[in-house]
Figure 1 (cartoon, rainbow, N blue to C red):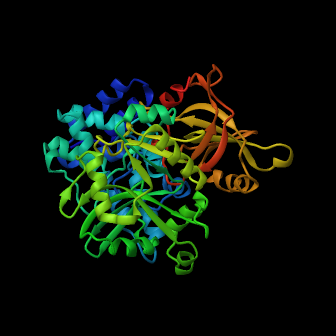
Figure 2 (figure 1 turned 90 degrees about the vertical axis):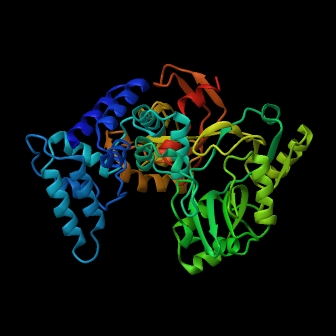
Figure 3 (figure 1 turned 90 degrees about the horizontal axis):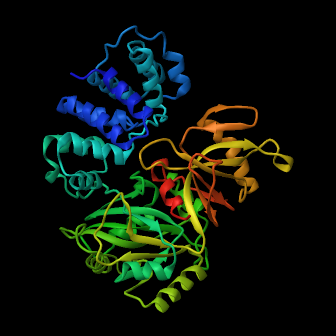
Length: 501
């Protein structure tokens, strides 16, 4: 029976080193020591997200119920997991008081180190380096299973705890694509130029890169369910998409695509307007802002899994499944044809184009080179680390942003620059109102944030610099928009930015 203190100790070890190998060794060691039924909870704790998800307890609640820490560790992994399960199950009248009582009992039984870990875990602040890539390597090491097999199972299940349990039990082959269980989406890398991307990926497919929101749709008869790129279900918020997919000429399908709201003349509305629909179930709002889907991949069709088939096969299946709802594109184009499609996409108000290798399989959850996005301007998704108070007409607002790129080895985001450009009055007001929710500490000039918010930044390039820890600095960085559909784990890496040198 594994002690909770052992998990906390491994977390500290992982946080204290920048060595990916050392992180993997430490994580694999505790996974090997855990009993099979403890593995899912251990992985969830170390990955920074309890299996129960959000349990309705914030900093104030946890601080109010903490009490004096225990002198010595007595908690087990099973006991902590069970206690969090009990807290998550509380609902109805008196739930706030009951939740506080349960959390108070758990924290009182915890040592000071265990209390700190639990507070960080339950408030989403546990940034210890055990990110997905590192944890997947540790699962492979502990189980003796091949890394690609572990990653494939994670792609199909979308859940680290379940992937670890299957790997250690030797049942990875049992993890398959299931209708009704979302698959982690395949991601694209920035392409240098259209000509380079077309040459590198030939034979290729070139299609519109739309300024919409990623969706994954599962259909089984009349049952249709829709998820975002972060695998959050939004079926109840998008009834027009559900109704459209019900009418498609197929009995069962798993579809990947984009959805966006259009103006009366067919141009895309701002990204934030599309995203606003994902939290809405109000009928009037649905009627006021209808969403249209554009599908670009098909992972399953009428009983046949296609995830391991090349893109050319999946594209043919997609056209059979969705008809006119395929995203505009051209297969195996000449460079002139690709340039014409790019011009058409930009003229229609879209971001640019995607260039995809027609012989590539669907590599979910990975930002490989088989899909490349080509835009007129370099844009990258970075993490907001802090914001400085403004001056002049911006006095009283949080303005100048500190920006960080993701550490691919699981460490905290690496600062690469600052910017206040591109911030409208509306965004300044939103930042000033919202940033304190994610505050970790502040000084006279700056409010520092827990890594949570992702912002899309346009820039002209990077340059070598000793000013920031990453050894580079952004050139002419400006804010494009915030990305509420992305997590810090999906931000661009420091290595990607260094590749611009």
